[in-house]
Length: 184
Ligand SMILES: CC(C)(COP(=O)(O)OP(=O)(O)OC[C@H]1O[C@@H](n2cnc3c(N)ncnc32)[C@H](O)[C@@H]1OP(=O)(O)O)[C@@H](O)C(=O)NCCC(=O)NCCS
Image 1 (tube, protein in one colour):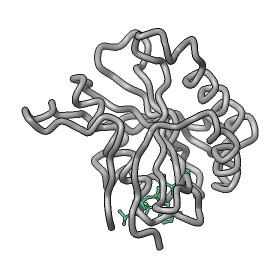
Image 2 (cartoon, rainbow, N blue to C red; image 1 turned 45 degrees about the vertical axis):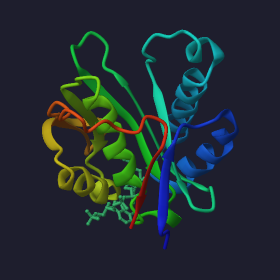
Image 3 (cartoon, rainbow, N blue to C red; image 1 turned 90 degrees about the vertical axis):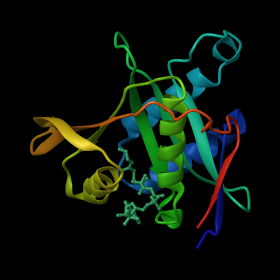
Image 4 (tube, protein in one colour; image 1 turned 180 degrees about the vertical axis):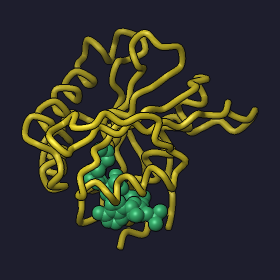
């Protein structure tokens, strides 16, 4: 059981760990994992890092006290919307599941979005049985099913669109931008 977790930005050196972690979850296909790594490469490219503009994709990692990457989140502004953001990826090493990394990452992403007056987070997932725990995870954290496309991913594998509306950040409750920790 992990007793302490810390959220920090990721580095290119974490790429292999992310690849392993995505595979270890057992729920993502090879092409999905490839897309995740493409987004990671894009997000950490010097061109994006130095542009000054809001990035299309942002990544954060949750680290154990042993500095092991337990999980990561990736999100970005939904194109052509005003204040809506997609949570593109949220994944935690199954060996460290249930230790709070997913909750910590999700709440940190939401906190960062509130601080920039984002209105809504969209998280898409699947209706497959192996995503049942994930659906519960989102539901218990204030996400509601806003839409469903039957047979979207495959026959009997629906695309479920969860959304959560964000309240504006309370004055004086600023997030710590690059460092956020929790103990459980
Ligand atoms: C869903 C996921 C991100 C949750 O991360 P986590 O670090 O295990 O979550 P936490 O420890 O913060 O919270 C555990 C909660 O998640 C749920 N959960 C989901 N999958 C779980 C798992 N494999 N093991 C333990 N708890 C799990 C539990 O119901 C628990 O709920 P509760 O504490 O509210 O009762 C993680 O299990 C995961 O990466 N799953 C596979 C990939 C995935 O489905 N990503 C979601 C986007 S598609």
